[in-house]
Length: 76
Image (cartoon, rainbow, N blue to C red):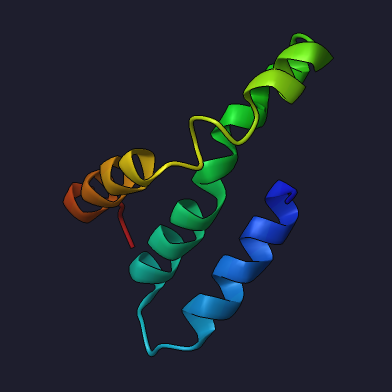
């Protein structure tokens, strides 16, 4: 999926809950951050096709990002 689709899905999920602005931002970041492995397309299209959906779409990456966002201090 594209980063835009990830963002839209995160937006719809965030709207299912009564959450404040900080929490909404964290949901959106968590929804888009999985596409970090798509950055390879900026350097080489072969890198993109070889590594996309390998790093950012793993359970370990999801747990790491979740913990980092839980501990973050994003201002309101």
